[in-house]
Amino acid sequence: MNAPLEALTVICRELEVGGAERPLAARLYSADSSRKKKDRLMVFFHGGGFVGGDLEEGDEFLRHLVECAPDYVVLASTYTLAGERPFPAAVEDAHAVLMWAKKNKASIGWNGKSMVVAGIEAGANLAAVCALMARDRGAPPLAGQVLVMPMLDPGLTTCSMRDVPPGAETLEVAQSCAASYRGYLPNAADRTHPYASPLASSRLKNLPPALILSADDDPLRDEAEQYGAKLTSSGVATTMKRLAADSVQDAAARNECACEVAALSEITRFLIALAGPPSAS
Image: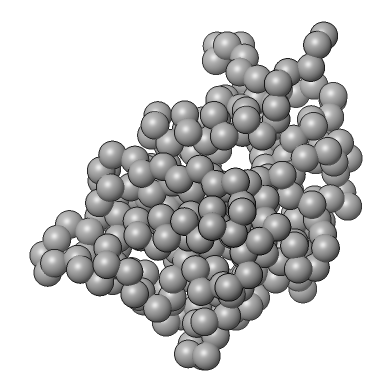
């Protein structure tokens, strides 16, 4: 699955995809310019706490990822931010993007065989929710989900989130999460909806295999690991990895953390396992 890095040229193309109510800006990444369609697609959603972020948020990460997993074409999409329309606008957009990709597979160089959904932080929330929505709505079929430092608990109830001491370097992340949820979920009743809070969902069976990455000193660590445990107990094949502490005190630095060698290695290993053994040539 891995080609020599020096032989790869990452091709990036700007495009528009269909959201729930309007076109959305997107970016397509591929490891080569050949016209042969790929078997595998990853749809990726950026971070930004539902209230910010854009395609640049994950650009470096996705370029590295395509180098590590050149059998994948990666579609990164924007979504409606909470300042324009709060929940459920973003999740409806995210699911609509998956449906658009399935319908327009030829235009993105994909043959429709295998789709993985992925994201970081708020985007990882959308990825997890897309897995729930795809199951509940019967489409599209997903081969896997990759959740990097996901925001999964609007109640901010976990120990790693609540026990950040005053003055700690990670306090900014905890405060940023609280502010983000206030913008994204202004209606308090929505905070327990499974499409807003996957961690609160009581129906986690029949979901695609998951890779969940947390970081040692990330306030989101416990909710990521609790979600992984809930998926496992529901019979979902789940790989949970806690990475060594990195510089995540800046809420905007989480994408750089995702670019670290350890995270890329875990994601690549997971994608290779999903693909199965190589076919005989």
